[in-house]
Length: 114
Length: 108
Image 1 (cartoon, chains in turn cyan, orange):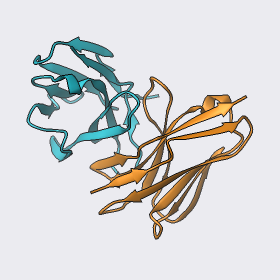
Image 2 (cartoon, helix red, strand yellow; image 1 turned 120 degrees about the vertical axis):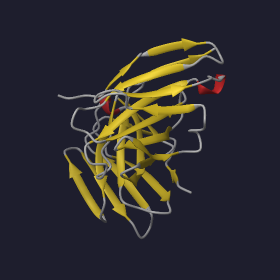
Image 3 (cartoon, chains in turn orange, blue; image 1 turned 180 degrees about the horizontal axis):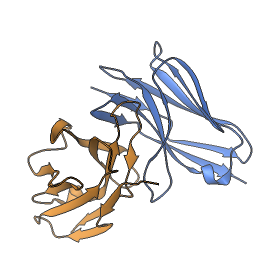
């Protein structure tokens, strides 16, 4: 069964460093999303991406964040200068049509900022 | 803005029926989704309601009342493996906002 894959599963970084989280969405999906979840809290929307551009972004997704789809398969989230409060699980999700509320999530990348 | 409220925790015994409620406030509404998340895992899609009424998928059912901005997830014949967090979500196409989550504990 097709699945969303994310790498790395866990990354530890120093405050102020740049990190790139990678995702390979399901191949025939058109809509891509990044969410984050601080331990024990709700899943928070960061950004959505369609047709090679950002469709929506939340107030969390400030200038230190960027997304890219560098080729036909990968979808990346870059955090330019990490802060302690960026420590969270980051989930990538994709959807074939965007509608019907069905997002397919990857297993997540746990980011720890020291 | 958008907000979704759920009870923080629900406890039930194996074999029982449990209902997890979700009330929402949103500027634009397309539908209500439900997701299950086991500890350390990813959210997995359970159901979606775009119209009022009940949708049934096996042991799980989901209900929506758009006039009341309210929905619920009904889990029947509870099993130990149903112990997880459950999130409702609203949105459409480009943005889905998740609720506060309900932690379900199933007791033997």
